[in-house]
Every structure is written in C-alpha cells, then in structure tokens.
Length: 107
Length: 390
Image (tube, rainbow over all chains, first blue to last red; front, side, top):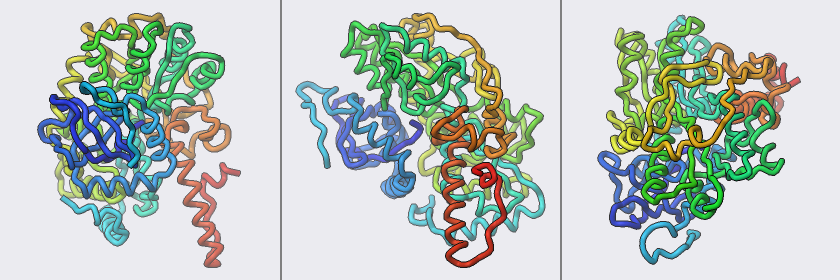
C-alpha cells in the first residue's frame, strides 16, 4: 500500500481539476488530482506519483522512468499493486462529469 | 539535481561507497532510516554489503502495518464480524495476526471483508450498498492520511451516511522523538522519509537538529539516494554541522504540499496518545476524526473492544522496530515466523524489516553460493540467517 507509482497525466476530467485520467501500468485509470496544486501543479502530459488512488506530487519524466524501472525490479510488491489498481472500481473512468462513459481502456 | 541515468550507475555507487569508507574512519556509525520504503531498497539492493562494517544502518518504525498494535487489529476484526458491516482495508493488513486469527480468517469464517486499493473504493462500496455499514480501516503515515481526508470530505459533500473510518493514521515525528529519548539506542543521524516529506516538507525535522543535535537527510528511494544520504549524514558530523538537508529535491519541496496539510487539518485532530507496537503509548502521535466528522468515525458510532493486547511472548517486533535488534536476532525469525506464517507485523508487510531481510537476505546469499560454486571460491562464513534457515 505504501508504493507511489509514476503515471502520465492524460487530461483532467472536470473543470475543478478534482479528477484526472492517467496512464499507469499499462491501463488508463482515473485518479483524484486535488493535491496537484502550487509547486505540484501538473498539466496534461506531465508525470505524477499516484498513491492509493490519489496523485500525490508532480515529478519529471526522467524521475518517472527511473522509478518505474526500480518498481519493475521489485517484482511481486509492484505487480500486486498494479493488479489492485486494475481491479479498483473507484478508479474506473465513470465517476466524474456529466455523460462520462464508463470505460477502462487498455493501452 | 541529479540525472536519473546516473542513479543505477554501479561505478558511481562504488565510488560513493569508497568515499563513505574513507571518511567514516574507525568510528562506529549508526544511522537510522525511518521509512519502510528505504528499508525495502536497502535489502533489495544489498546496500549494507556496499558499506563498511562500521557504518550500520538501523531500521526504524516507518512501516505503517508494522506499528499497528494487536489490540487495534482486534478492534478491526470485531468490526468486521458485525453482520451489518462490510469491512474494507488495504491488502497488507489482511494477514496480520490478531489475538484470535487474522482478517483473512474472519473472512473465511463468513465476515464480509474486502481488500481495496483506495479509500475511494470503500466509499464506492458504501454508495452501492446503502443498507450496509461500510467501514474503512485507515492506516498509514502523512503520505496516506490526505487520501483518507479527501475521501471523507467527498463522503460528507455527497451526504453518504453509511461510510465510516476506523482511523489508525499515525505521524512520523513523535516516534522519532521517542526513539531519540530512548536510552537503548545511540544514533548518529537519520535518513528522513521521502514520501511522507512530500506532504509535510522538511521543516518538521528541525527539532531533531535543534533539540537532539542529530543530522537529518531526507532521501529518495533509489540505491544511490540512500548511499548519498548516508554520505551526507557523515559529512555533516565530520564538518561539525547539524542540519536538515534535502537530498530528494526531485520530489520533496521544502514546505511539503500545503493543500494536503490543509485537508489534514480540516478532517483530523491529534490524538492525546496512541499505542505503537513495540514503542508503547506515544503522546500526540496519531490522528483521529475531528468533531465535524464524528458521524463518520467508526470508533464513535460502533462499539469496539478497545482492549490493549500484549504482543506474543516469542515475538520481538518491538525491539526490531526500535532498531535495538536486527531481524535475524529475533528468537523466531525464519523458524516459527516466516512471511507465509508470520507471528509479528514486521514479517507480514513487504516493508517490514523482517520480511525484507527474509526475502532478500536469502536471495542474495543463494546467489553468493552459486557464485562460489561457479568460481570454485571458498565457502563464505556461515551467516546468522543460514544458521536459522537450518
């Protein structure tokens, strides 16, 4: 549970920027983006660290790639976390925005 | 700022280790890494093998699952056994032994226990099951607490009435203070936690430098981050400095994340005291829901046993969490207590020092043996783990 996983911010899904769509571990998922303000402000295309469904901070692409490399070497601790992310219903792309379709897009 | 390409550079790691060896001299250094993520990296990459024998890394209390005392786990299991309750928690918690079985055992016996990835999953379950009471067993340091806070703010805004939090969020500073006050352990400095600091920033550690005159270096999770952090602590001592330094500027800002701190202040208040496994009761070391969220507080809405339960006699997690014992020095390490059949929390969580040592310690030694056989070298001296692995 204590892992923070790099993800690429694809777009915000509401005007208040409370939720955003990210690419993470091979899937597109929705995360809470409320904390991405001030020094951690992020725009689509930027990388963020995701922890239990929340984007915790903005990071550089180089940092994201290096962290992913380390995580991949961790084996089960990382793959178990990814599995849980894939299964997390709250992170499906259906929660926010009028007419937002439920879809989990495999990349 | 360093470039990511350099992080895994083995030559850089070796030259850093050589500098540490040269500067450390003959003195015995004890540096505590507070965060479970660091402990994981240290064992995974064999950082201790790179360091000279007189530079000792002491593994601290920063694993959220490890520090939960058995009584609080029993409280959770009691909640889970309530027929009206859907009990939700992170996967790490499921196998932790309570005084009468684990959450997994309660689930097998018919309790509705569900593993979730995010507190938002629990909230969703609550929305979809209006006739049930959905309890989220919240654990974690300041890294995770803002997620619980934001979920509660959302539940309140939506008017969800059947979502409750059993709050076990803890804070990082009080256990550091408890360890510094303990006569059992003499430390030369700390490697400060990376992700916790993304939330709280670096200023909260200043009391360590001011009151206890010990350096703190906030570090990242890559092997070179840890080595660099160790080097920075040693340099501070040798140069007569005592400061809070930030090695992890790539991610950690000096003031942390003000928005996260704001939601923490909105939702939580500091508990007068909270019990930590192995460390006992520590004043103002944990969070509970404030009065505005009383209706979401499982402790106020439900009746929980709230009984303090002593750890199993054979278990020495407390000594391991304080850094007084090394994992393999515990009486049951690797024999009665293994990741498959854990007795204590440190063997359950992948961030616990015992699980990390068990998993990676054996692994690297197995590779050592392979190398020895391949090269015809002499068998290395028997290590404590080999003795215990029997």
